[in-house]
Image (cartoon, rainbow, N blue to C red; front, side):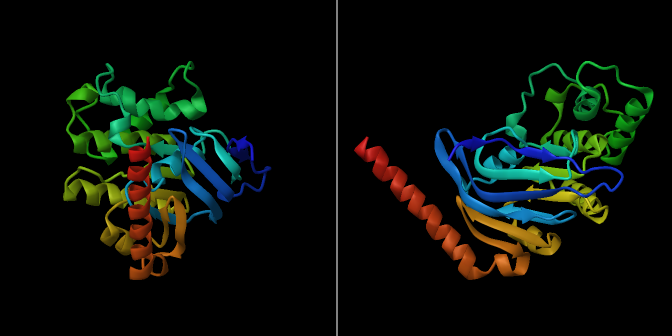
Length: 261
């Protein structure tokens, strides 16, 4: 099977459809090793789905494949999407905090997918960046270098960048990791609001209690899909035990290969 790229299948005007992400027998590799195996299903328009599983289960790899940042085997299509309809909030570890960038500049980058990197930023776009900073509680920190922010402040700034992008599909990779409960609650309110606005939200998470409380649907993966559907049905003790056993098997296989090497 040859690698395929993500297809953006734009809806035809005037009937703009909400984007649907469809996967058919998708396999994605990381460091030349398959990280997601034979995944088929759909993230329906306007759905809010938690993606959970053991460490190394392929959660981040899946988001990157949907964004087109990694090639995938099989069929992966985002139907009803146009340029700028997808927004990606990566883990903080993916950011270069030493790059000389202010908080305001970071948020303005949210306009690039639609405006382009070489066009001038308009006055309304600058105003929306200020509004986004206010929405996440960072007003007054516009000129601060990104490298001087705390983990919670940086996460707020990254959310502000996604806010100005105004995308219809949000891919969030561990958005509440290493931040305090108050910041988590504030940012979770934004995620819930996106869902109420019928945006499609995919969110990689580790906190299963948070998933059960706020996310209607869950994809549980352990490289291979374990369960995908309503959260209460996906996160059963049996499914979680199966995912854990699959993770232990990878570890044993990896150690065995290392010893033979």
